[in-house]
Length: 169
Image 1 (spheres, rainbow, N blue to C red):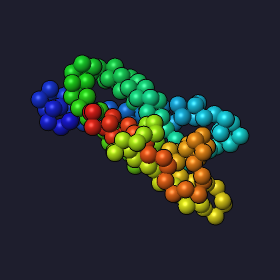
Image 2 (image 1 turned 180 degrees about the horizontal axis):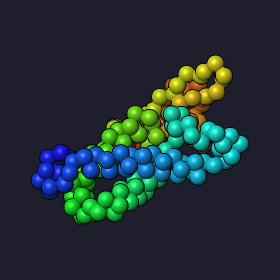
Image 3 (image 1 turned 60 degrees about the horizontal axis):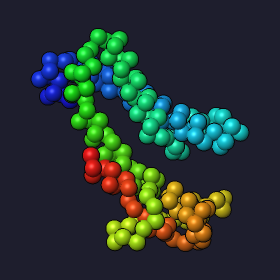
Image 4 (image 1 turned 45 degrees about the vertical axis):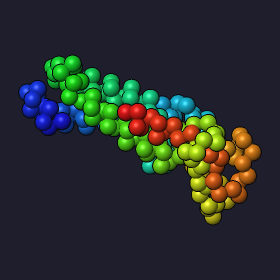
């Protein structure tokens, strides 16, 4: 951003300020979307809505929240949307790439079961002291919907759609 802001003659500090607002808007939007999608889990424990450290964000909500915060910042600071967009889009693509790698490491956003050589199984986390099953979202989904035994160590192999998306960027 620094070099491109110099080339476009936009104060880099204003771009970094905008980035802070985009991050805040993105995190809020991602969490709000997740809570709306999973409200049945939060309706009995409203204070847990703020526990983002326990996971639970949705990309689309983050995109909407971050984009909205960015547009509001640009309008309030009288910056040209197209000019700033030319500077920030490469960073946006990099951010999505990093996010998709994070999804892969978490085992969420996975594809359908597959026998292709590059299909990936996701690991089960051992049972904790509360006897609650833990594991990647793929593992838990396969146990709940596809008959995978809870004592298995790996989910069924699935297409690594997170990596497809990341490397397409």
